[in-house]
Image (cartoon, rainbow, N blue to C red):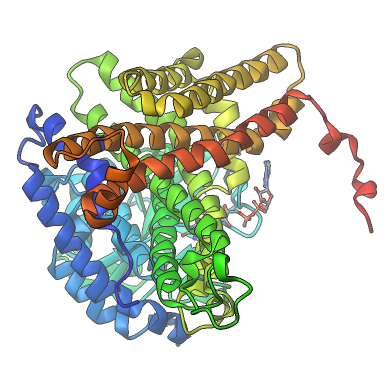
Length: 622
Ligand SMILES: Cc1cc2nc3c(=O)[nH]c(=O)nc-3n(C[C@H](O)[C@H](O)[C@H](O)COP(=O)(O)OP(=O)(O)OC[C@H]3O[C@@H](n4cnc5c(N)ncnc54)[C@H](O)[C@@H]3O)c2cc1C
């Protein structure tokens, strides 16, 4: 199974055939140089890094885990060499703008290449969070802070993380208790406890800069009173050298179900009364600053769902082709008939196609979000910019919650394909499952994402962003309206898109009538419905692009497209035709077999049933 982590063929299909990126980018000043050849070369090279450097550390690092010794965190030994190669390759700077010394890749390309790295989230998080913290300083720090911290963080010498959570402030960040006291020299002294902080300490970096959310003494309660501070592990001297150890301790490491090679730290700040911190940006603007990082991290968590699920699918597929069990269906009663690879069994095929269609849909969703970011960034007018930003706003909670939960289910199906061997540690499947579960919890639990979707995102700008997204879905259907072979699934998709709009309208009416418990208790079912319809749209889009390409291929090979006896052998012999046919079938499978769930979800939502609120606490049981 060595290195089965990424399907570059499908990545290229999404970027080139669906989003038509080189063509779109060719008209943009910022991205003109991103030709098909350059993108292909970059993906190949990222794929090599993923397969040859990162994947080999996956299981070894899980076995070794992290250690806390004398207040210092030691990460698995194999991470040191992997980090060195990763930094030498410049991959950590992929999304950092060129003006800041980075590669300045388009975001769509950045998510595509990161897909191969993120299946080993324990490893990737050390890098990803460090660069995320550096980006905060880049965008909001003073010139002195950039010089003092950011440059070394971008160079890969110093690390970073993000410290929000406290024992009594998880989802409810606004009730945090960490305090900041102002000193005459303009610096602050921090006291408090943060928990669950990923990568707060490690021996991968010489120094670690922790962006900490805290409240300045006297500032109001709630999120509006929160500021953000840079708290370095070692105080930095004026000449840039490392000074004394700051007054905080890593008091423990969490013992987790998965992500065991990622250090999840409890930090006690200022037990000695002298924990140095510097204000980043303005006072009481901490949540605004942090939210920039959180929003892109939410798409990043969706990517984690995709990357892990994608690797689990490829490994399950490979296993299903190799593992032999039982005769095929037609010879079931003959004990002498040859044993066949399990991929021949209909139930295994069902699981594989379920995984394939979900992985491909998630890939399309996340890359589309990356594309929206690029389009907004380079938009020529305010209206254009708002259109792409609007898609991104409404899709971010869906990306985060739908892809983390669905990705987890893909790993579960992968285990089912592996049978008992998947449950054992000989294969990484059980680790993928353990590692991915946390993605439903951090960066705002999936329940909180659903509330954000219905409480804020759907109604944003008077509902315009959401309506524009539905309009985009309808435009895709119109673009492929001439393809008769797709008529059936197009009709199904059209009904589902209309139903999604109607259900959002139903929520709006409930709100107006004061029935706000109906939308609130149904936020998660609505998010699932929206995720399902969005995936169906993107898969339909892919099937339209694939069908067009396949017709061209038939023409070039003089194969009559409407004669199954001619197309079937061609498809099994020609790998490009097989791939394209696989895309069309993925979409058909999803729309015929998964999309109907949108109907039942809408039915439940529109029933207005409030059992969830009617049941009293005591009636839940013991
Ligand atoms: C592996 C791991 C790594 C992490 N890394 C970091 C990190 O680097 N930095 C950091 O700051 N934090 C980190 N966290 C913390 C993470 O962000 C929190 O666990 C998360 O925000 C949830 O908080 P909580 O655990 O206190 O759960 P709670 O907030 O107690 O939630 C428990 C349940 O109640 C629900 N709930 C809570 N409030 C509401 C509400 N108002 N309405 C509806 N439902 C609600 C939640 O959805 C959830 O289902 C990490 C966590 C884990 C597990």
